[in-house]
Amino acid sequence: MKCDLPNKIFPKLFPPIRFTEPILRPSGILTWEGRNIHSNFVVKNEEKILIYYNGPRIRWGGIGVAYSLNGRLFVKYRDNPILKPDKNEEALWKCCVLKMGSKDYRMWYGVFKKGKGYVNYAYSSDGLMWSKYTSNPILTPGNAGAFDAEGVYTFRVMYDRSTDKFIGVYGSKYGLIGLAISMDGITWRKFDENPILKPISNTWEEGEIFPMYITKFNDTYVLFYEGNEKFGSLNWKIGIAYSLDLKNWKRDPRNPIFSPCIGNFDEKSVSDPTPIIAQDRIYLYYGAFDKLNKGSVGLAVIPLEKEITDYFMSTYGIWNNIEVKEDTYSIGIVCPLYKKVINLKSKMPGNLKVEVKFKGDERYKIFDIIPVKETCEYTLPSNVYAFRISYDRTAKISALCRYVATHISGIEPHDIKQNE
Image (cartoon, rainbow, N blue to C red; front, side, top):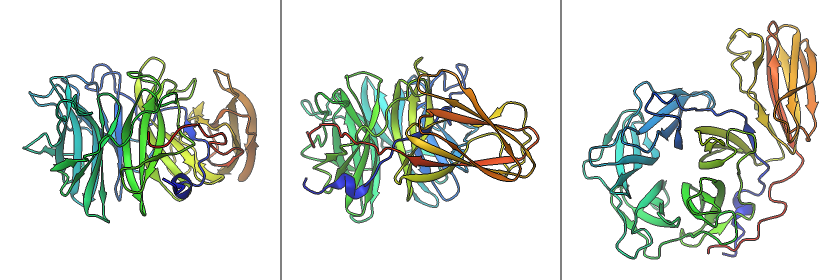
């Protein structure tokens, strides 16, 4: 593939900016979620952002949903789980949801039967209450000898308006990716020349790869996928691949674009990416596992421009008048390789405490205390690994941060071959 597709779609990818806490956590061992939530998939509609996710892969597990107005503070649906396994299903697995109209939501989700993976279909008018298709499954394992003979997993679907067809990509038991096409999203035909993507030896994705999100920019298909270095490992990282014809794919030389972060809630694994792509950034919702294998959902921002501005996540904001108590902190932000310019605005005079971590620090340290009367600007250097702010109890302070990148992602591209 001669065309430079990575630079055509994402000319620049700057290092990720991520939060130090999940945006969605498991409810606890006494709930259907247990100690893990995982396999998230995000859908944005006109009013809300919905996160669909799995509880444990056991008989009483299932699929749940949470919703948010701002994409950061999520509330779980009161009637979770929205889907449960039937009697002939061992467990439900990763789902993919498309919003096709104002009252037309469609879901493709994995099930396990006798140890093999299948794909089922469900539909909904509101994205919350679902009906299962009566003729499930709609995608089954291949014949003996086929790459997907042991099961089909992680089915991801997009609707291609230019061809009026549904495009499906899916994984196999042994970590290869296949392609299927459908006119209605229910009856699928697998590509004769599957698999379309395989793991690459001696790289971060040598073990296995699975498709996680597929979309299209003009004439180019873009696939976000996860991979690991060793088959069966949970140490996932995230990459991107591009194609003009769905058959021939080119990896982004900057892969992996997103990796685990030591000391953070995602230090063991990052997986299941769903991007929401804006003009100057990618909001990347992802599954995370910490060093104790506890699963949650995280959010990161991958800037597409050298400088972006974003607001702090906290329980207090000038816009909602929630009373601030002592030691009310913003959620910490991990952002090495950025100069941080904090813009502060206050309705009442007060102080704001800045706490930081340098690389290798386990705990935050007080870096400075800033008096704020009305507005001010405060700069943190790029060697600050992570930071958070503490709100004054009496002042009504809100904060935005301008991030100015000092490096670009992938200065030394990984040496991998394309489409192997």
